[in-house]
Amino acid sequence: MKKTLLLLLFGFHSSFLFSQSIDSKKLLQHIEFLSSDELAGRKPLSEGSFAARRYILEELTSYPNVEPLYPDFTQRFSFVSGRDLKKYEDAANLVAFIPGSSSRKVIVISAHYDHVGIGRPNAAGDSIFNGADDNASGTAALITLAEYFSKNRPTHSMMFVALDAEELGLRGAKALVDDFPYPLEQILLNVNMDMVSRSDKNELYASGTFHNPHLKPILEKVAVGSDPKLLLGHDIPGTGSDDWTKSSDHGAFFDKKVPHLYFGVEDHEDYHKPSDEFENIQPEFYIKAVNLILKCILALDSELYNEK
Ligand SMILES: [Zn+2]
Image 1 (cartoon, helix red, strand yellow):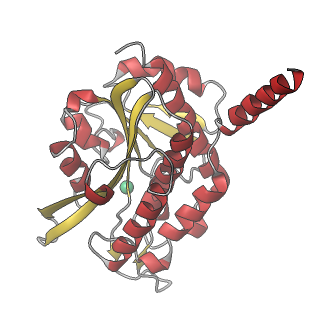
Image 2 (spheres, rainbow, N blue to C red):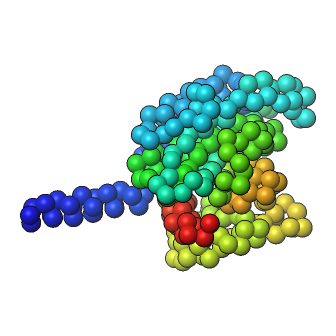
Image 3 (cartoon, helix red, strand yellow):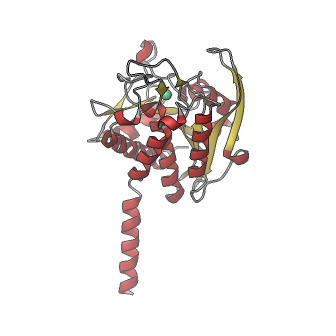
């Protein structure tokens, strides 16, 4: 009897420890591969993008309790880009679903995996825009969080979406909300991540509480003494580029009146340059930032449960 109790306690204790953090080693492996020269900047429908798709799908489908909502876990869509006037056929969002324990409401966790590909070489002769921070960092975080929640069942259902073609005008996110597998009212919240791997000031922003004030007290609690510093803001209308409400894929959810929260850092010197590469991310900040995002999601998942 005593033995059983000890085992139970030990079992509870170790799973409790595990359930507090992400697999940081795998997080760094994911971002290193996704931002490698081999993937050549992950422009939609390029060979590098296809390699990124294979990698993300292989990961997502290898975890327990993960279900498809689209054939082959892939939502295909096409569009004509206003930027290069090209038709993009069969762009692809990669979607993994983890059923919640108690609520049919869905938290949609998103990050775009595309970047801008190959461009004009810089002074060092580098023409590959690796997009390590933008947004291999969010994509690797997405994969790692999906693995976490596949083993630690959330209260609400969770949809993990690696979005395509953000750089061409939030195309993947727009395609997702236009062809969503459930009524949009069933979405509790979109949590979007875009650029989360470096900050000289050790700051991570959560943007969106101006429009979604019910999220504010929950995040303020998590922010007390957090490392990195969790700041709310960058969401006041009329403040120009300081307002991030439409700066990434969460903008497509905002346009459909779905509550959103966007995690990101302020722009840095390597933003949209070939030098946004793995060597220039800050691994220590990155690991802490993704653990902080996990903490926020866990708080939201439990504290929003009784409200709806
Ligand atoms: Zn981005």
